[in-house]
Image (cartoon, rainbow, N blue to C red; front, side, top):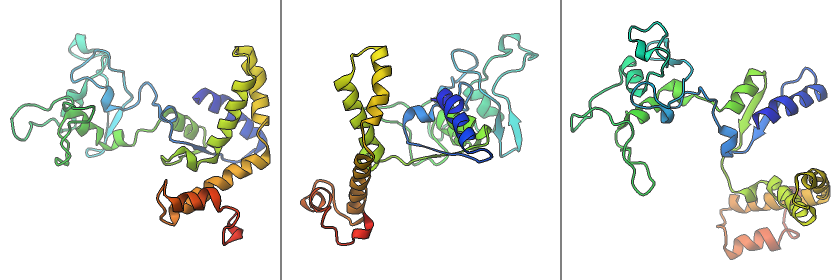
Length: 252
C-alpha cells in the first residue's frame, strides 16, 4: 500500500496537479495504519534488553525536554548491551516512571493479565497499572503515526482517515462489490485472467449506478440523523421504499 501510494499515486498526482498539495483520504482499515519497523510501540517491547524486540527510533521525553535513545550505545560500558534495544523497564526508569505497584509492592508487570480476550488493565488507575500502558501513554508514543501517513507527510502531502463506520455508509464499498462480482463471474481464476478482467470489471459499473449507490448511502445517513433505528419498519420505509417520495427533493 505504501509503495503504491508513494511510487504510483503520488507521481500521477504531481503530473496532473503540478505545484499542488494532495489530501489523501483513507478508510480506517488496519493495513492503512501499519507502523514502520522502528516505530515507537510499547506493545512491541520486552521488559528487559535485547531479545526479539525491534530497534526503535529515538523517543522524546517531553517532561524533561530531551530526546531518548531506545538502543544502548555501541560504546556502552557493558559490552553485552551494546547496540541492543533497552527494553521497557530501562526506558521507564530513564523517564522516572518505573514505580512500585500501589498495593502489593511488586514492580510493574510488563502487561496486565487478560481474561476472555479482554485487557486486564485497571481503568481506575489514571497513570496506568502496567508497564506497557504507562509507556504507551507517553506523548511521543501516543503521537506515533502509521508508516503510510509518515511517508506521505514527509513528501509534503496531507493525510486524513475516515472514522470507523459501517460499510453501508460508504458508497465506494458498493462499487467494489459490483466490480468484484463481475470479476468472479468473468475471471478464469488465473493471474493473467485477473489482469485482463479487473479493468473491465471497474468499467462495468456505470456512472449512473455509482450515483445510485451514493444516493442510497445518503438516505441511510439521513435516516440515522432523524433518529431512526436500524432494522425498524420506519428505517426500512425511509431507506428502501420511500426514496422516490422524499419531501425535500433538493436533498437528492
